[in-house]
Amino acid sequence: MAEPRLDTRTIRIGLIGAGMAGQAHAFGYRNASMADALRGVRVERTHVVDAFAPLAQDVAERYGFERWGTSVDELLADPAIDAVSVALPNNQHLDVLTKVLASGKHVLTEKPLGLDAAQAARLAGLAAAPGRAGAVDAVGFSYRRLPGLAALRAAVAEGEIGRMYHFEATYYCHHAADPADPFTWRFDQASSGGGALIDIGLHAIDAVEFVVGAITEVTGARFATYISERTDRAGVVHRVTNDDAAALLLVAGDGATGTLQASRVAHSTPNSLAIRVFGERGMVSFTTEELNSFVIHQAGGDPRFDGPRRVITGPLHGAYVDVSSFRSRGVGTGYGEAFVAQVQAFLGCILDGTRSTTDFAAAAQTMRVLDAATRSAASGRPALLGADADADADVAQVTA
Ligand SMILES: NC(=O)c1ccc[n+]([C@@H]2O[C@H](COP(=O)([O-])OP(=O)(O)OC[C@H]3O[C@@H](n4cnc5c(N)ncnc54)[C@H](O)[C@@H]3O)[C@@H](O)[C@H]2O)c1
Image 1 (spheres, rainbow, N blue to C red):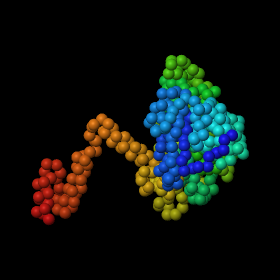
Image 2 (tube, protein in one colour):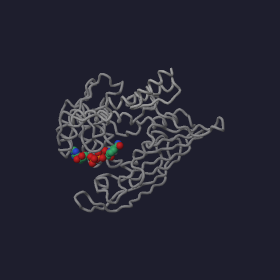
Image 3 (cartoon, protein in one colour):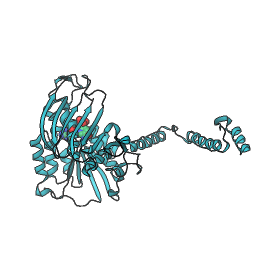
Image 4 (cartoon, rainbow, N blue to C red):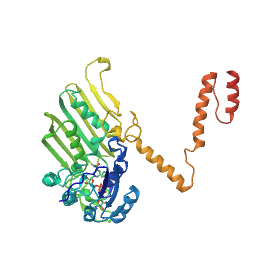
């Protein structure tokens, strides 16, 4: 087993799996140095591997990895790579993570940790082996990093709603609501380890454990499959062998009771994680549908104003300060993507030889509005824009 590297000034990254989640990891590594704590640290995107070679190449080119390939073993044999992200179909996790752990490299893997609790225990045991001392192992429960969810945890941990009584957690998606949505590994029990509950419900389980505390009891559970056959992209019909939806009754933390539902066939909710906790002195709630805020109700006080408050997130909440493109409150997670789109549009104009839709001429109009506002305020009269602006300016000057 190789010694874990101690040099943290340059961290060289290998990415295994370049599908949907792998690309989100690539996006994360590319923007990681926004964080103050990473100032001066070079995060080098070194090698990306996917079984489908054209995808590996495409992701390497789009996200700035130096190399791409199809061999996991080749990536792991490179001593220059310090840390590895794994984003593979669930049934690959045990084998590939076993190799990654043996390599001594730091690892961030996608959930679930293997197909079941036995595989997870095995992997956790390997990760804790003495030979890996100093090597990081981490699992991608990314929703914890959202400032609104982090704020809920902080509020309940600081006792803002007192003892937690009961809670509800839901993760609803519609990605499989249409029976025509194609069969993939996600619908096959052997490849996935489960359906909606393992695929998305695991994030709701993690949200409960993050906010309320460890789940100590599952007192009831129902799994349901509503669409029992699906056709893959090659036209082959398959039986669906895992759950489209699941409902659980839980006990968590200091005896709080709660419900958890996960569904991949929930029309009207493309991708929505939510949690609400009721306590002895109030309530907190968060939903990804309102990503940049959370709700808190602290009962008592003036009964005329007793009720829930929506708090817009800012630098005091979670990882906000490290990911927000402006470090001020209200800009929020998601705002940075507007700047990515803006840079993309700008680069597109350079490449296509086209004008920007927000060129200087367009922006000059916004300044004419400001100018007209100043003139109108000074004159107390309407200020005209466009062709009549000059005449209006003359009028304003005379009036002044
Ligand atoms: N945290 C999240 O929000 C989130 C979101 C989506 C998926 N996931 C997790 O990420 C993992 C991947 O899901 P996905 O949606 O990206 O799947 P995907 O099907 O889009 O991508 C998986 C990729 O792995 C490649 N692959 C399969 N076997 C391989 C192997 N042995 N070696 C190299 N490449 C191989 C496939 O070619 C494919 O490109 C799953 O475990 C899933 O649970 C997490």
